[in-house]
Length: 174
Image (cartoon, rainbow, N blue to C red; front, top):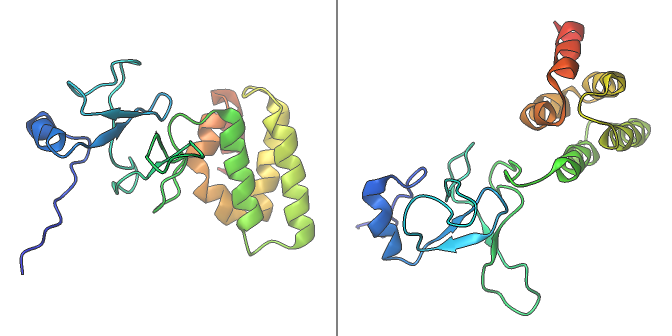
């Protein structure tokens, strides 16, 4: 039996552009998450960034969603990878902090009191500047109470803090 499933390219090399165009593919713009149908080249003509089809972490196809309540036609990329839960590159600080908060809320290893404490800590951190050293005790509390969440959120956490805060945390944890 011959498989009809065609492999998806990582970030569509030049040799496959025509192949994808012939199938009416929608590419996702990492700047805002909007879709670009049948692009002329590799990039978004509106933002000048390289388009993508697959998650940069797990390499599986990025889900397309409809933001319109009156249509099921895809208009945007999903906010998270449906396979590995990686946040989309266009999400801002508030949305990324909410994602870390949701990881805490979903952690089954926390007591209700620990969960409530960490949610309050993250709510305080979200209103701080990325360079605010007062966030270090909050990130440390996340590390102490929810080490699995702390480890799983590393790339997002590092994007949410300045180099100085990262160095302070590195000094605490070795």
